[in-house]
Length: 345
Image 1 (cartoon, helix red, strand yellow):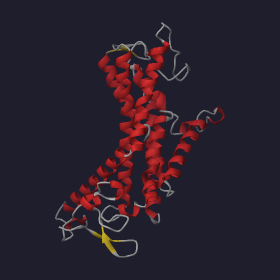
Image 2 (cartoon, one colour):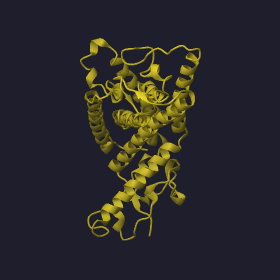
Image 3 (cartoon, rainbow, N blue to C red):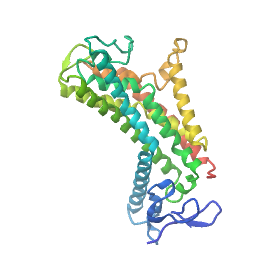
Image 4 (cartoon, one colour):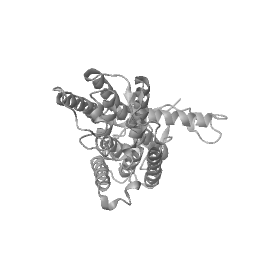
């Protein structure tokens, strides 16, 4: 068994596990401290290359899948080990705590909280029901973080995906065989999607814990006025969290595309967050109502329809379809750009 060799930028063969200084990375630890799939051993006869006829029937596909999973695992580990990522998750977890404490203080003297919702104003959706049932803090926290905090966190992670590697000078070392540009881009996007899910669940779990500590729990009154059991309410809370996570896949694709346009991680993150803010502002301008249904943020709060009896699916389906469209368009644009990009670092 030996490590795969690939041609470096100067045409000379180099070890796939070589770091930026040209020395082979020890113990499979690659650039930026990642445990890299690139440094995994391959058979000396080349059967591990995943090419036609390699490794017997199905052998090439199996090895290719192993490399893909290894690369994804490496990207996932790198993403969630960063202090920046942990700080973002800590901020997201703190939002439900602050909202819960604020509601508790405001209602400690028997007062009420102003009703939220798309038409009621006075705060995030469902905030008026939090004092009656702590489970509503989950819905309130998601409604409070979805317009800005969650997409900003996704934008930072996705915007740094490619540009951050280029800025650190490690991108070329991630493109050695058999990684490839398409596989690396897919691993980056899958890692961003995993962060979408984890970030949303962090908000939901934090809100549920705070709601259970500060407020009573019990049967849930839906928007339609019907009552459902607490177990059914928990199930709907989980479904809402999944819908919120799915609402961010368009943002992740947009951030990934922006990340392929520059070699500066900071510039990519700032641009992505700037675009998010711009879209949010445009969505609030009545004179531009004609384009509102095409903005990725327009149907974000449609998750509230899951708290109706029966559930209203129209806006939910529009939201998921719009996110899929943005993911397809900007994902394809990122692939086209990254596939032809001159990698100099």
